[in-house]
Amino acid sequence: MPSWAKKAAIIDVKKARNIRLSVLVPPKAYEYVAEFAENHDVSIFKTQDYLTLERKEARKNAEG
Image (cartoon, rainbow, N blue to C red; front, side, top):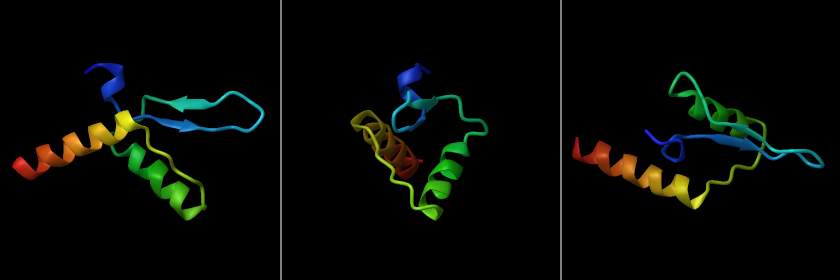
């Protein structure tokens, strides 16, 4: 699977370089990050590429 087709999280650090978490293991690690952000009032922004992958995954799950 190409790297653009994998889930990743980017932590936007003010006055510093952003931190990209592209190798999240186990596969549900992204959901843990999203839950943490929600519980701690941290904003989450999804890129257009991520939204496309999310829709693709939802269609695949609906068919299966």
